[in-house]
Image 1 (cartoon, one colour):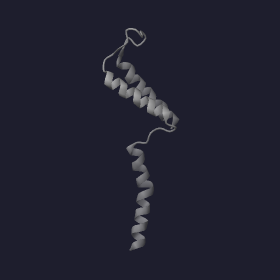
Image 2 (cartoon, rainbow, N blue to C red; image 1 turned 90 degrees about the horizontal axis):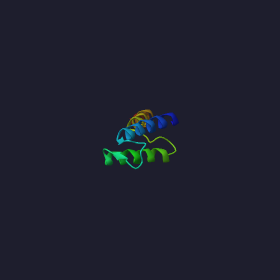
Image 3 (tube, rainbow, N blue to C red; image 1 turned 180 degrees about the vertical axis):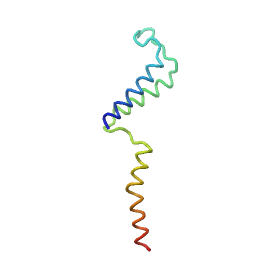
Length: 80
């Protein structure tokens, strides 16, 4: 999980840096798409503040197939 979290943060940071012209000149800092930059920074803050990497649809799908589906089949068979 930590590796995936670090990988996602690196990817988001690279995308944010691509939006900044002259990143090392604080006085002349220009951001080409301010809204997208803020969205990326908020996502990075969210990931940094979580203990684990936020879940994804794939993770929930795997849980439902691996846990909920067998239980549902068991209950269906016990009712018959």
